[in-house]
Length: 497
Image 1: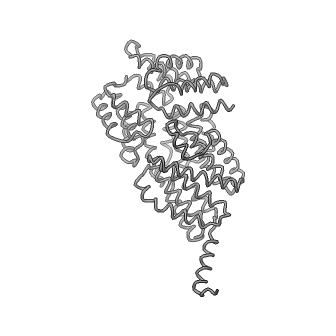
Image 2: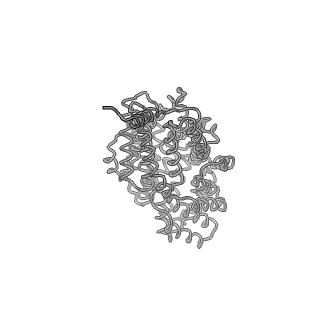
Image 3: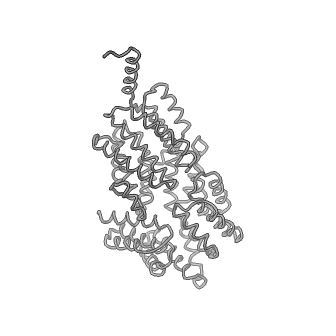
């Protein structure tokens, strides 16, 4: 049977089009990737447009464009933008599907796109859709890893997937049934570490190092009990990336979590946030926290206002209003405090622990916090330990309620812990557990978690297991998912040693 010339030409062009699709990770694309991870989306888009002219069949292009849209949606928690870009997702997947089946990038790109948008679905509360997307991603990346076990990028995505599985709260067991995956944080963390080492030795994939560094940094920051981790994370690996907004965000987080509030403020003041970065208003929230921890209430309120007036998402809105209320209370304006606490109830959602805690406090607004205990807490969070301790010791105990006495012991424990006075830390944590475990607040449970951390560092596995388990047995409301998640990871770590 003869084909008509026009049909034959069409088929030839179609076949050429399909088989000419390639993945070209050239220097221009690597720089675009670095711009994307720096949140310099305008610069990245300019490089992508150059690539479209010089290499229009490069399938790395739709992957890069998808990464930009994903980060815009997640950084801004912008659900409206999510709806606008949803139609582009399938178009990009279709383009990637034009790669030959023997391309190691085909399943990898599609698996990553599924993972990215699955996490966005989770952020907006679409848990079933997110679970299905994660399951789809896992199947694709797992298969790709079986077919190409030496393909380094597989390890990065598998590491992230295993970490996600390890962090699923107890109340989301149905989620694990949908995704039908196994894994834990430690497994995922080790996979990322190995991937970083492999990328360091392979110039083809060295552009992925900053991305891996961000993921491992966030895991270390939130789940590891050893304060020495902070010193490693604030090494030249991160500090040298002073034009990368995402790594600067990580650095600020590390400094704040490790009581280096002055250093965090210095980094805020030295970084050029006007350098064409995509708006990252959550940093204004963190900046407000930095000022609040120095008891600079005027500056703190300014930053919280910028955050809540510009941020498109719902997370941390209630918490920001509560912190504005704290500022007013410190300023001795009880009426303004109560008004701000009313706004906690009227704004934002309760998807995260911080907002749940703010909501609960607002519902009990007749229980106005003790100002000196509040100041001590804030100063402690900033790393001003001596000032925090002085305030605590000056508070007459007969003026405190039984719940406030629990908090005072807890604050003394936290200060002792941070200055490595483990003897007193153990004493005050134990007292907090004894006197506070029947209250719904987080203090007793977190004391058990922190005792587990101390004994883990001291390599006393038996006591570490005891206190991590005790943390899981205590019934409490505040910061439940976060604290219990850390206790679960602590048990996994010590039981695997």
